[in-house]
Length: 87
Image 1: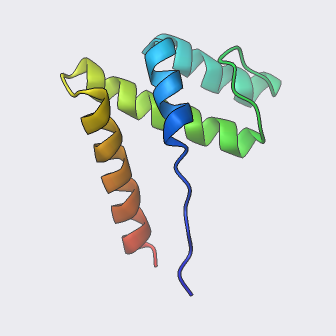
Image 2: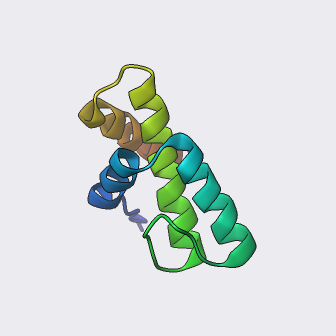
């Protein structure tokens, strides 16, 4: 049975556009330590950390010259590759 995974591209793009790498990192630590964050994302802690980590990855690629579209595409490619290896 094939397991589906979810990528909330809209949320990841919003976070990567709105917040700096330092802000995203702060929000990850804040969520882990306090159970809430200032990055305007809500849900379970697992969901929040996952989306913030993805946004952090996209933001890093953008700072290295990737366009938003190419950075999100690279993220999706790596997530697919990870899931293929872990089938």
